[in-house]
Length: 355
Image 1 (cartoon, rainbow, N blue to C red):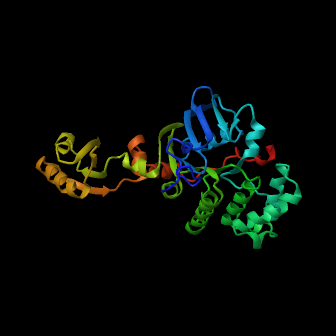
Image 2: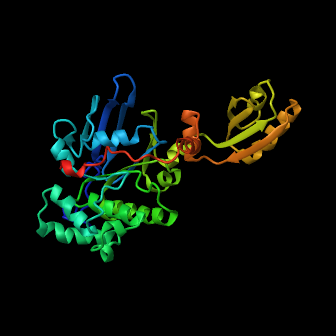
Image 3: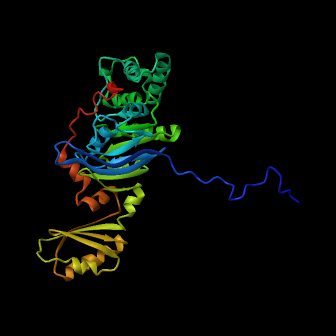
């Protein structure tokens, strides 16, 4: 017989500690930024970022991503709204906020006349970190981003990818609880982008760091982020994990282009089994369906019977681009192509000098 009074007894369900909710590292409520008093670059944004996650801001150039980061890193003052960053009030405790975070800006801020390690040590000086601590830490960080062999080289000799990795080391010198990454792989080649992705994953997996990153790259958001906020014209459209966002579409997407025809064939398509929704734009139809491969032939037959000539049909599985299209009516790929290459902004410059 087992003595119920023994110390090895398993605790009852009433005695077991309840699971703790995830810690909020970033909490934003109604954050708004207007530069002219009329148009909001960031419009009443609210969301929460939890300890140990990679949270992504996905949207095209001009959507309000960098403006949001500039507010959360104390470079810009919000017009309205409030936020707590690592437990510190964004407005009243700016110094504490800055000491709790790291920033990897969109454009390079490294001094090209200095060596790699001199740049990292300079960033440590801005935080008031003594050299007895900053020197071994800088060497450790340069090893992390695989720049230890190039530490004594001047940054002017670095490639674009090496400069990006140096920025990452600089952003980590104060061992931040929260690291902001503004378009971390913008302009990098595929191989270098993959390497930066690996460093970002290591920061989360090995160091349990919380990361907030902006991007307009769909594959980057899909591969790296635990949760994503879709942002467009300064507004948050939807927040969720990549799988949740794609599942919100409700199935496959069939896009059909017919020869110019003034009649609306949406109703004929909508009556087909498994069709969830039909949207018409000029002579194009965008159809949500549960079973794309099975439904497409039925759609073709229905359109032929209605006298329409199909010139193009495509089936696609749910993707983040389709999600963005669902909520904005525009493809993020098209948005970025029209906007062209990003123009470097000066907003992040000097961030480190304000420590």
